[in-house]
Image (cartoon, rainbow, N blue to C red; front, side, top):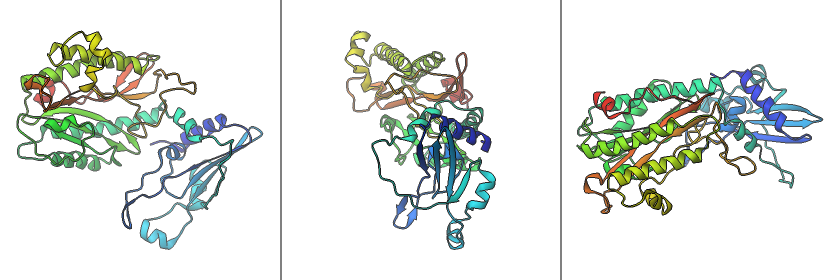
Length: 393
């Protein structure tokens, strides 16, 4: 859990970045309509939550900076017995004054603003702050990963004969809820066979077919902090030789890229190296033919590895933090940053240009990596991923 002292420190840090004689306002999220008069479960806006830890809608934070001094005001929804009967208790002004370390607390009112030439986006400053995680944030992410580990290990052991993808999804998300996770961090992907070659496959409605692989990309959110784990496992407990060849190629790439992580390295360097290694592997397996250098120049490998090596992770699974500074220069890795590393290989069943034994196989392996003072810590290291570990489990 993150203390109110930490939220107060974040607000103070942001206040220092604000220009003098300025007013900055950050709003909470709103309920979103699901169907007619029903709504999706409420989730607070990540940037607003980052500065407050407040989980109610109809709230706002206002920073007024004059003569070098900043006054911070929190607006909260008023207490209303009728509304609370239907939707639950509100904190109200009096309790908010006791809990939140701000200068003033008032009831939320509508605010009308005319955009001017001197307006700036306060969110840009908050995104920069979110790049490096505090000890308490890292602790929450580790908790999310531990719950996700239990879910992945459960479905690896689970009897998958005569089952459907959605049944595995249900097993995974049951453990998330059972272990106190707020929700899934994103819609789970459970893709059997050729479905794994659709990168954002979320229908999860196909049967689990004997002798096929299942790509499972699933992570929970614990107290607003995400995990993001992908494992690829066999339906019937054993990898075939072609599956093993592709899997070990992807795993070898992932391990090599993870070992490159340290402060001051560029993500683009990790990307470039992962593409080079994958292209070399594709040539070795006969999926591509020719000079690796020329194939990369023509981007022939991108057909089989079209996505990035990874992304920032934190309050959002794709954390809303910048990849470039204000001058457009790529941001290097620094201690406290957390990113995913997730190389993959996608061999569509309709691709007649590749050996038949590899068609219909899609593999991705994803871990969550913390950049440390001298290198990295793989936060999801204990989630099994070698062929032997998966088959043994």
